[in-house]
Image (cartoon, rainbow, N blue to C red; front, side):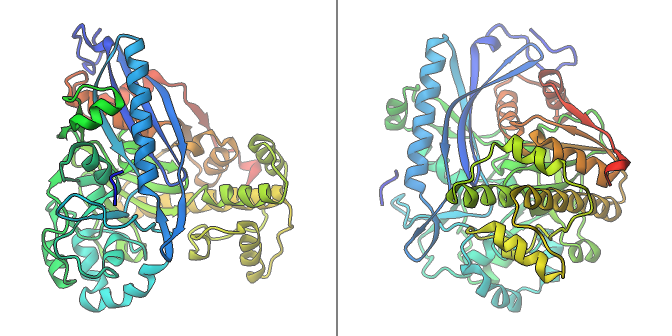
Length: 494
């Protein structure tokens, strides 16, 4: 198959070249992707989106897969656009960083060929493998080592369905993109921590789990940390996109949530975050994993963050529910503006029916409004076949889930937080932000929308010496660069 001026708090290097240097972030989510240029001048980080493209699963070869050839073509188109914009402005692209969703991978043979288009986590193939994996590896033992919450599509369950892996390597999606740009095989650690095969304490592969599952010990390439250089662009790639062959590809928090959390604009240590997009990643930032039985029972995950932090969180349903409803309504000829839909939902009285956003019934696409209404009917309540009512149900359900998850995280990690940061697309949803403040009883700070790209770019800039310090200094740059919205509890809305 073809392959297809210094910062007042010490954050920015005052070198004269910093204003002329830019960094390219390849930031791809499950429904869309973008290539963004980041410029750091003084204490300000500016973003410019130079290319956007849709993304989504396709039915191919008997399953739900990612069209990686098309995805990689869009990455190249985005890098070409970035090179053009930088050249016009007399700038140099110092490096490229890549982040995507987690869990999924492509299999590459010794010749560097992708053996098939990668499966999507939304495919149901791994469900049948869960029981056989747990017969070989007790769930308590798995959690005690990896700290990873149980999700039926976690990488180890997907890999358990594979056959004839000898001579192949599994590259997680951002690492797969980096490989086809540089021919260097690495596994970035924040994404490795989502596989279920990574030791949360040692920060290394849990090789005994690979052996127990009959998987090759060298199935994954060696680990690399955010800020380290993966490699440089292949000459043919550099020529095609118009960049120098020496342009670096730098590892960032390649799990998009790791990059997003790195850019949470918090000026306090004790905060909760919600990275709100297709999924909702809700949790705390810790120094050490929480590997207790109570944590496992609550299905919390301990994923690696930038600078060795722990993203202690629960992966919840997210705005996928609303976007899938919108897709169904559009097919039926009803295409309201999102702002109008949310305003109509906000006008409805509180106390309506709710769903569990994490219900596996909502993972696959197709007719989401009816699935939501059917779930409500099973509880003995009724939900009108009205877009505003369904939207309000989704927003109420997400906010309730956020409050429950944050309270659980505080209890399990023995931490107390008084502020919740919502970053990502959901930070623009005023109804969701206000409901989250109401249900948690905490102040909510919304923004930035492009937290993932910001985290990606700031890690690159630090690696290039244009930013100094740790996460605190990186986050000060985010605070000084973006207008943030604050929401406080309105008890009358509850």
